[in-house]
Image (cartoon, rainbow, N blue to C red):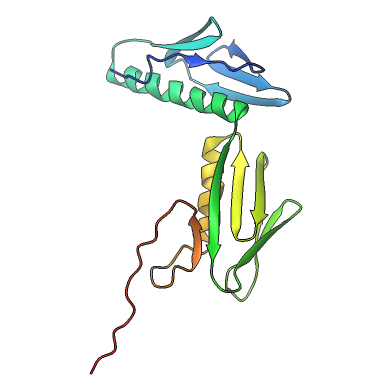
Length: 178
């Protein structure tokens, strides 16, 4: 049985939540997030909280119960506070800057990499730290992973793009033979 699904999701002040058929709709200002449940769970709004219940006692219903509760909780956190990931650029001549809706990266290739910033995502660059932020947890993580994938950190000198909390295990270089 899901321990996650039992906990109701609190609705922060300033966010309106409504049930539209089998979907939950959350609004804050102009921003609207929608979670389609396809009728796999029951949901109701009570006392400024959203409560999820299972349709039946099957294993799938229990899995969907916890999953949809977590997804809706992430929507509430995203609309209230937002999500962010930080990336660090290491390497001589490696740099980044934002111009308009494009992130320009110089990562040691013969050409610059121009990454189009998706809708709803903001990117800030300060020295060698890139901060990706937005209200959708999945999109923020995906954009950060795509930026990191342009030049993943290598284990010998640690050059490349890495998460700020990521630890790169370094390898010893080639030993000189006699």
